[in-house]
Length: 277
Image (cartoon, rainbow, N blue to C red):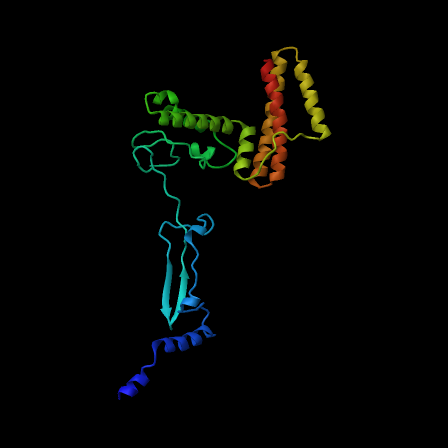
């Protein structure tokens, strides 16, 4: 009986080996199966090699689920990605109450500049070309009341530096977004389209028009004539600004760049007129 018992109980490794060979080459299942042996153990990629922006990040921890079925491994891949860590106040370690996180809502400490926050986000604006100047001005003044370096003159050197950087960035953001030309160039930039601001126009008709306008500016007898030319430039700027808005919305970026070139020329003429007034 003892011998029979030993004979009935074949080594477990032999049974598993036979089961694995049947399971591995089974055509009745579409599940990828890996034999449970050290030599064939699947290598799991490192979570660090996955980009949260490209593989669907989630707030929960990522794991690999493995289940044994018929002595094989079934691998269920879940996202290795996790969201970027939420920034905290460098002073009191509090979490931000809202974005953008320029000033801590708990301790009122000014935070370091976050380059990932664009100019539209600073003012809580939708990322589109048309903006409402009235709302923009009010939000600009509200930020300056919180960020102006004079308000933190008694604070640490570190916070004074942050205040100077944040205030300068808010000023640049306001100037950029309130000007139709610089706003057009900026929104193209954050869309990944570079605009060569030094590129010249070779169209004879446009060059002839610009030369004629500049001659009119130089020969203007009085401020009334200059103001009339200024109004003309404003109308042309608005016309091409509207054309840019339509081209950008339709993602016709070459056409949008062409509009920017014309806006640039009319803007320069307008600046010359303002200097003479």
